[in-house]
Length: 421
Image (cartoon, rainbow, N blue to C red; front, side, top):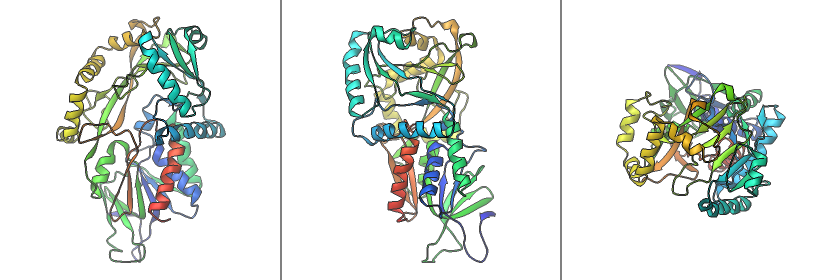
C-alpha cells in the first residue's frame, strides 16, 4: 500500500484533511488555511475533479434568504453568505448576473402566504425586497403574469462549480494540497503511532494508498452517512438521494426570460416547486421536480446502484416519508414521465410557454437527510467519531452554495473549538 505522506522513521502527515471536494469542503479548507497559515491542510476527493455532484449540478441561483425561519442558522448564514458571495465573485472576476427574482402569487388564495413570506424576508433582513402588484410584475418580466409578487433584486445567477474551483486555487496558493481519485474506504488510528500520547495521527485509506492526519472534517454530501458510519456514528439519520429534473427551453428561444420566476411554495411540501431560471449563457431552465433516485448519484432513471437501493429498502424512515407525501410523491414521478405536466404548472406564471418550446434538460441529485420518523432534517447536523478526532457534516441544508463562505466560517469556528486548535 502506497503512502501519500508517510515516513518509515516517524509518522508525518497533515494537521487537517477535508474529505469532499464540493463547495462546502473547499470553502472550509480555504477558511481554515486563512486562519491558520501554518497548518498543513489537504482535501481528498473521490472523483477526478472537484464539484462533480451537488455543487456542479444545481440551478446556479444566488439566493437572498427569504424562505427560511427567522433567527434560524439557515437564514442568518444565507443572508451573510449572499454578501460574501457577491464580494468574492466580483473580486475574482467570476461571471455572474444579478437578475433578481419574482415569487409570484398566481391567484388570490396564495396572497396570504405570500404576505407571510414577505414578512419573513423582512425579519431575515433580506436586502431591498419589495411587495409588488400585478402591474409591477410586468415591469420586471413582461412575460410573467400574477396577482401579486415579492421582488428580490439581489437574487442572482453564477456557476457554483467555477466558484468552488477558485476556492480550491486559493487553498493551493496558500500551500494546501488536493488529492483527486481518493475515495475514502476506511478511517482508523494510524498503526505506526498507535499508543503514542503525543498527538498520534489517524489514517484515511483509499485503494492502494493512504495518508495520515491529526484531524478530519468530512463534507461528503450524498455519502456523508456512510463516512459517519465508518467511524462508529449511528445511522438514525440517512441520506436519501432526491433527483430534481429540469426542462430546457429550446435554442431558438435564447434569453426567453430575464429574471428568476418562482411560485409561492406550498408549506405542506418540502420543496419550492417548478420555477424558471435564466442561465448565464442565455438558456432557461424550468423545474425541478423531486423524485427518489435509485443511486446516490442517480441523475437518470437508468442509474441504478444495488448497494444504494438495498440501503434505502432497509431504511424505515423512507417508507414513512413516502406515506406522508404519497399523493405528491406519485405526482412528481408522473411529472418525470410526462413532463407536459410541468409545462402546465409553469404556464400559471408564463402563459406564453408551450410544450413545443421545451426539451428535457439536466438533472441534479440532492442529499436529503432523513430521520427514522420520516422527517426531513432541515437544520445543520454534525457528528463526531474516532475519539473525537473526526467531525462529520451530516447535513448542510440548502442553500449551501450561496451560504458557503458563511458556512465555512461557522464550521471553522466549530473545528477550532472542538479540536482545541
